[in-house]
Image 1 (cartoon, rainbow, N blue to C red):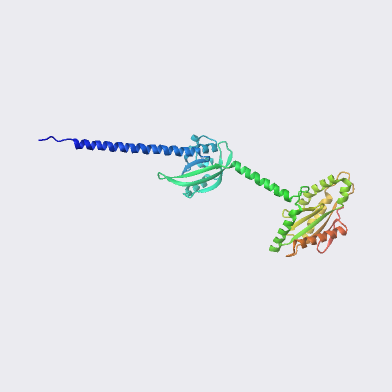
Image 2: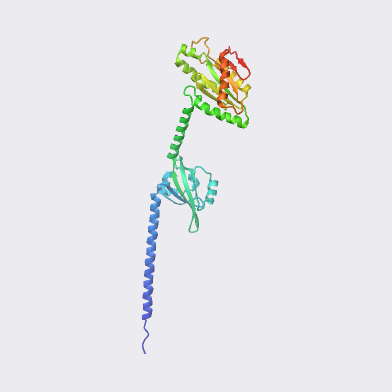
Length: 337
């Protein structure tokens, strides 16, 4: 009788060993791929020019790169001990917590401000979106320091503002210039027509100013005009607009003002001009006064018609005595002696 053999068992064991080796190789390959993917992820993370931080849903740091740490002025190790509200310089903690809850896969993009370790504030452009990793909600945030860009934009805006100002401001008197007058005249007339509101236009011309220049020189004349501008503004409301129309002639637009109110403003200007010593030392009894014409806006008239009527009343004041105020129905002389 033949003894039983173990060849089948040995064959099975050999097959299992080979299967185990194949499984080990697959595992080793998977581990190698994981290492490579991890290395690639870390490389991408570190090579990014933007700061990257991954938050958990409680505001803690799950992962971050060195660029983000440098943005905050601290080490990468220190970042992992921070919460998002430790560096956010714009939103309160409670609002940030609500924002974390609301972040989803669609994400958001906005500008915010981050607080660096030394207390300085930087402007940051932030893009985020939510994701799920191993059952946890995470928020991926891409952060770009735009502080210098914001400074450049602000400098550009300031430069544009100054340029616009220079284009509409008379350099000597610091009142608006005649170019700006015509655009504002049309604007205020349209507003007055639309809302059926009163609007007055005052034209002013300095009396004896040519004689003043001939006597004391143009330098003193320019000094007089540069002092006259602020004095006129002091007599006006914030809503009133004063212009140097040309030479020694000026215009004032008075929105929401009827003739009586405009006449009172004219009286204040003449009184201030009489009281304020704008003349050079030793001028004696020499006086520079102002003649004024006032017109009230008529519904749907043209700017040319409105200006022509105000000029007509100014001409009346100059022709009939100077240092007077002429308006639609009267001419008044103010004694400032």
